Amino acid sequence: MILSIRLLFIAVLQVVITSIITYWLVADEYIELSEQSLETLESFMIEQKQQQLKNYTSIAISAVEHLYKPSDQDNTVVKSLVADIFDSMLYSGDDGYFLFTMVKA
Image (cartoon, rainbow, N blue to C red; front, top):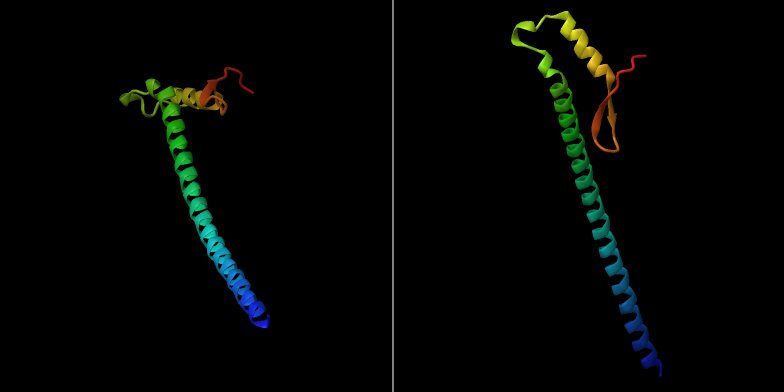
């Protein structure tokens, strides 16, 4: 009887130890994968924001480049007009377009 209880205790102890080791290994791997996923997401978001900034800059430049001619680089009237256009540009984050308002504060 005592031998069967000892064997049962050893079997249960092995199962508990195996369960603890498996849990520790899985939890450690989960934490490592979560950190890698977070780093990947962060770099992806930064790249997306950089691309958005390039796109918005390109849109803003295309809105005023028709005003410039190579000989008019120092024209203050054109610079003032460009500044007014840039002041009146509003970005609508919902649809991704710039809106041009004609109302000046």
